[in-house]
Image (cartoon, rainbow, N blue to C red; front, side, top):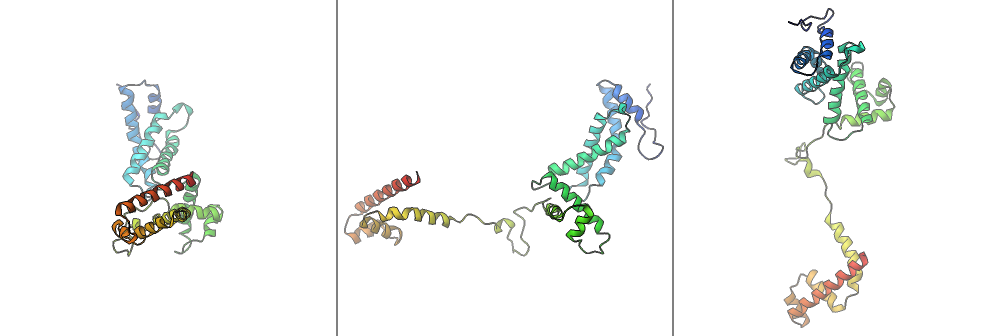
Length: 263
């Protein structure tokens, strides 16, 4: 029956002393025995991973989700740790788990695409604001004060502060404060079709000027006065069928000329 150091406490803190077990894990071939030992190591170091996750709470992600990300980072640390390099597992695992959590925030938590450099500025500005909040007696620190604390330029501070507002985005279905039922989407503009109409009229004007006077009169009565083809025919003393043919001929001519100009 094998002996294991899995239950042996660390002499200085609550971290388990698992050096011998990692050495044994490195020697075991793939199989059930290795998987059991690996899972035991992950379980023993899980409290440390959760403590790291707690450092990132309050940043828009549920703590339970952070625990899961930290556990994933711990599994990666256990799988890739090489005890022969002489480095303690904890020294290897902490940056691995921390990096996994930061990667999660970078890849999954931003509503808008923000360059990594700006994300770094955001983090430095956020830390500086937290530190200055303990010394500025409740007032908001100035940009200059933040820049001095974070060792950034004022321009970089402004970029970081803007990024603080980009971490999450409102839904277009969110109600506008005091809007009496209006949502954010109701405040967005849309293309005005009147501009297209102006362009079309400007393009058609020279072609209309080239039509015979009677054809222009028929178009005017039909589309600007709203008269029916029968009333136009009565006013001009021609048949309704003739009016219809004249309108069709006008449309064909205008279409050909406009297409030729577009080409």
